[in-house]
Image (cartoon, rainbow, N blue to C red):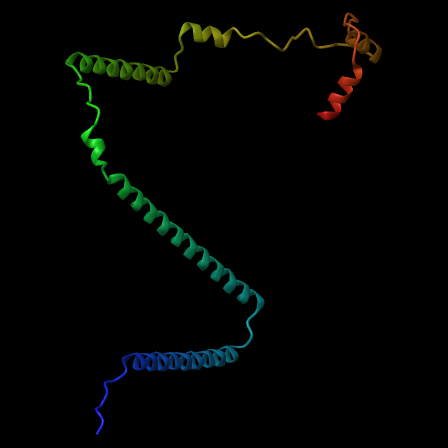
Length: 187
């Protein structure tokens, strides 16, 4: 009698995969048939209902895309943070020494910060009390009155207005009028 051989594992795995695919296909067909039956039983949908469904699907797809983009962005940020956390060992060994801050420099910095805080407080107080310095007040009040401007032409007839609008012919003669005309067309 010949010796019994073992089971071919690859062939068994292939058969199992094939049977799983077949069962899945059959289940899918039965589901589709059932869905088709219920769709027919439900009747045709109105255009508005179809449109609403399509819009809902579009919104769902857009939300899924946004969520995916957000997830990818967060993942990228995490990767960037990880890469930033990696410390260059050579850089730490040969780092530039930080200059020491003396007590005088600390005191000077504190005084500057206090002066800045006081200045900001004064500005806030001025804004709150709505008072202005003398120079600011003069700048606001001493503005020329443009209601009576001498450049305004006052005339009773068309001839008087044209006579007042005439320009003195002290201008030099135009040497290249064609250039000016060409430039006006370009604009």
